Image 1 (cartoon, helix red, strand yellow):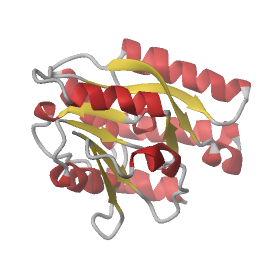
Image 2: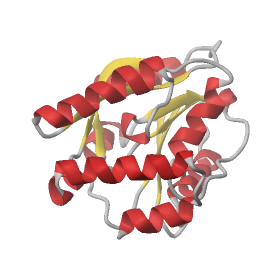
Image 3: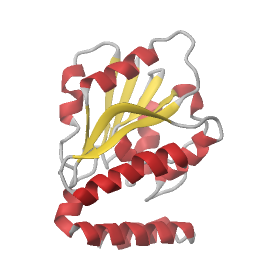
Length: 206
């Protein structure tokens, strides 16, 4: 069985509904929606979702992303293999808005971050075989996907599937593309400097 865990936020749109709609009545898929009543931070909600899941393969589905049906079908087939290898990875990132800078961001995320560095952000929709999970995520606010990637990298390098994860460009359009890029850069520098993630999170929210 494939377990799809969706850590929704209060202000999250329902883009993920389009992914799960064809699988609502499938016996080989379980869908676990974890809201903020179960965990304040996204890391907490991912931990809760994993422990609620029973599937051989777990998919952490970003709430503002949409996966193609054949991409999810591929993971279902992987979950049904008797000898399930230790594997993990993400889907090919693409924004839902056609803009040259957003295309460059997706290229960088796919090629540099995933294929070269092995870091998979949640908007790629991270999947992994159940056996690869060792301990719960410890980071409380931001960059929990980076922590997860660094842990999994100790076991294997991620797979980047050719199926697309269409991600909402809402924040870039709302805040301005260059402003959002600058904000993301500041957050990454703060993370590298080991600033508290709760401080970075509150800065991000403001």
